[in-house]
Structure formats: structure tokens, C-alpha cells
Image 1 (cartoon, rainbow, N blue to C red):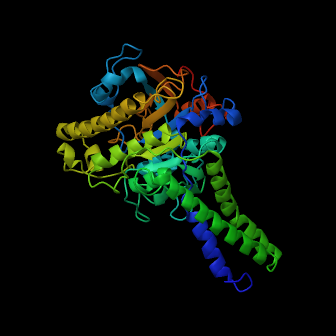
Image 2: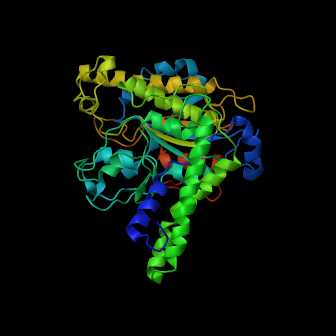
Image 3: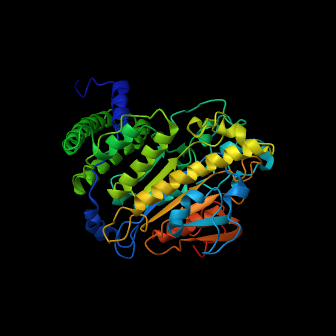
Length: 455
């Protein structure tokens, strides 16, 4: 098709296809950290020069507070019943009590605590309650990614272990986008999660068997470059023939195309990926237990290969009513959290809470077993937060949220203890994490009123 007879509809369809293509994911081995140091200075690096990584994990429906919280604070605290699976790794994480997210409180908006718990977890700003107008806020992971994303092939990864999505009929009149996303690029744009393990793996390492993936990535990169060249040539031809107002719209639309071109160039500069030498996951596992485990493993692989230094992972959305048959629990999780103080229902929720603690323990052990470029563990050079947008799922409270923080941020954080911050904004912790990464000018975020001390 020549430039002159190419229709606007066909052209825009071509541009849309280009923008929808996966980000180039030529992962480098950890040894490329020296190249990152030359451009980053101290940004997202530890004192030893190793990458400093950040992950935010979200579990649904809060917890049973009496079983979650230890009875004492300090380094000699007695670990709680729910957190028992973490006993063996207690020196690698800290229990953070007294962190609040009042942006999720009802106020005059009435019902909708699950939508608010999800939508405000990483934004710490109130949501607009409207069936048509979405307005949230940029999330802390994206604030971080905007500053450090150029250091890796992926500015950030947004993952989920739940393929179900609704577009209507969500929580109490809130748009469904709030309930199914924790990561937000802007106040109106959530970052779509990838829930298919196979798709995540192929974005990271390429298509094919071990040993074939680097070449497949190179071929895909060249194909994308050819498409981009074709689209940009047509854009220049069209730009000469359209009105000034339309030309501005076209320029705005092509911003995404040029961003993709920059990502391809960046991938080439960072070199070929390290093939992990394992089989590609077959797709979405049938069981939730295997599903969560494979997404946690992909998170670990992404960090190990320095594919990205920012990950968010939704282990489930708030209000999720899945059953946990593999634990012998047939009732829905959300239904059980409204336990009405019935002991049998409370015990089942405690069992689910403990299962999430087990998965977190497994991730901690996986990261702690990987040696980083500076001789420390990958976990030591990370900040891994896990929490929920509701505190007490029965009462729909959003103060004293269940929050754990694993990793030492390269020696900057004090693990192995329980700290009670006595009712300060969760956003204060986010400011601390951003500053620990070396971000300049992040003095306030969401409803923060200070930088969290003694972390």
C-alpha cells in the first residue's frame, strides 16, 4: 500500500498494533550492573553498587487482627499464629504495625470498602465514586518507575494471580478499575496487569525452548523495528496532508510509537538476555496454589536477571470470594471474612491468612538463596512489601493495616523485629522507600505527613 492511498483508519490501526506489542525484554545477567552504575550513580543501587529492587504484594480481604499481630514489639517479639510460617526467616523481615490508609475510609461515600482498599493501596488518595468517571492517583510503584525505569528493560512489571475481571457490577457503584488494579500510571489510567505466566515469561525471556529464546527476541525486535519504520514513514507522509489541529493529535498519538522505539534501542544497548534454562510455564495453572507460586517465581526471576527493579503483584483482588479447596475450605473467602464472630468461620479465615504467610515465606527464602553481584543475597538488596487494603475484613477497617516489609534495602533497613508506628499514614513508608531508592524531590506522597523513621 502506498503512502498516498493509505487511509486514516488503516494507518491508525497499524499504529495501535505497534503500541500494543510487548515491551522488548532482553534481560541482562546481573553482571551488567557496572553499566547501570555508570548512568545511575546511586539511583536504585545499594552502597555496594548492586541493584536495589522494590516489590509490592497485595493479598485480599484483610486478616484476623488478633491472630495476625504479635503480642509485643521489638526484636524479641513472639511471632503470631498467622505469621508462624515465617518463623524460620524472621530475621529477614519486619512486622509494621500502626500504618493507616484513611483514604480508603468511607467518609460520605458510603459502601465500597473493597474498591477503596484496592484502589488506594498504592496511591493513598481518595477515589472518585462514579460509575463513569475514574479518578484515583498515581501509585508509588509508578512514581518509582518513572525515575528508575530507564535502568532496566522493563520500567516496571504489573502482575496478578487472578484472571477474572469484571467491567460492571463491582463494589457499591465504584468503577471496576479500582477493584482490579493497585498500580496506576496516572489518576485516570491503571496499569493493566498480566495474569498469564506464559505471557510474562515470554516477555522476559523470549519464545521457544531453552537456548532458542535470545534469537527469537532478536527476530521479534527486528520485526517491531520494521513495523515502526513503516508506521513513522506513513506518519510523516500523512502529516503533510492534514490540518494543523489533526497534526497535533497525530503527534500526541505517535508518542507511544516513539516510546516503543526508545525501549527497543534501550534493549539493544543492554545486550542479550540471560536464558534461565527452564521450561516456559504452560499458561494459567488450574489451582490457585500453583498459580500464586509460579507468579512469585517469575517475580524472583525478573529481579535475578535485573529485568526490572519495580514489581507489583496482586495475589487476589479485595472482595475476592474464591474458595480454598486445597486447604479444605469450600466457602468463599469474602463471605468467610464476614464471620459474625463465629469461631468456625474465624478459624477458616485464619487458615487462609496463614497460607498467604506461607507463600510470602517461600518467596523470602527463594530471594535469600540467590547471591547478588556484591555477595549479599537478592533479598538483602531488596524492599519487598506485602499487605492488604483492609485491616479487619469483618469490619472493613483501613487503619492498622497488616503490613510486612522484607529485605534490608542493602543494609539501610532493620529487619527481624516488630515496630508499632502508632497510627501514621502508610504513605509515610512509601516516601521512605522512594527516598531510599535515591529519588529526589519525593518529600510527600498521597496523604503522607512525614517520612517514616526507624525502618
